[in-house]
Image (cartoon, rainbow, N blue to C red; front, side, top):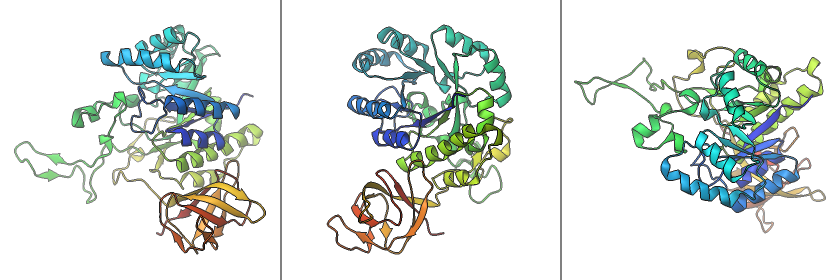
Length: 409
């Protein structure tokens, strides 16, 4: 049985490598132009070249997002950009604009094309249309149920692949086609600059009483009427496979390397466990507990099982739950001395209990007893960003293992 692909976000080169190391089958990223995540670090052409080489050496595929809706002023710069990246070994291009699709096919005739969720792909006739344009994969609109996905899969040839989001933020507008950010602060969501005004706090103002704010509902903390919970489908891997989904996509090119490592690792374990013995597969709650250790909102299954209700919204706050801090990443390890060289990411103090985890491993917990600076001098704490430290580990670790600690409640 061919495994469902685990597709991870790569907001920059570090995150690309992290996603691959922690088990992603494929990564998607934006270049410096024409991507719907203008606020992500994104990759320069030399970084794309390095990232693609790194991923391919480890058997992972690389997809470039060129999924803006282009204006006339974008056409000539995009044409020049395609000429520059033509030689890169990009496995597929993610697009939503038919004009961009044509431009890629003209510049790179054998390019594999994936249609972005921005294209609102909600029925099999539309999928058939895209197939006639040479498209290999459809990224399904988030608004589809399992029943609809199964029906759609039955109407398509086997070679047409379906990709679906399984984890991350949900957009309040249909497949992300939103004008709210553009209207309110002139940042175009459809050109990669969304400010997420759907998650702001709102109140009601009567026309004749300017400046008098009335709560839309009775809650002293404010009203977040458009504030969706985060999508999470880790406990529904069998349903995704049975529905015919070929690729399980994690949202989050703006997220941290710690987020990417944690989420990819949890989904990797769940997917591998399912394929090891589908008939006797049992979901393990520790995978869900791992997901809750990164910054997240409360979880929902979105549209997969039904139309979302008020239970899929959070009316109290748009803030994230952040119970753990990312405190460092291992750069090297000496098995003789059991000392790891660690690049600090948040303050670490002697005596704290920390958790350490890595690719394809379970985490272990230890108390931080030995903390040295880069020169080997004992220190009590490390408050400086990206400070190089030496930490004694109770169990063997490797490069790119990560350290975290629970925040004080």
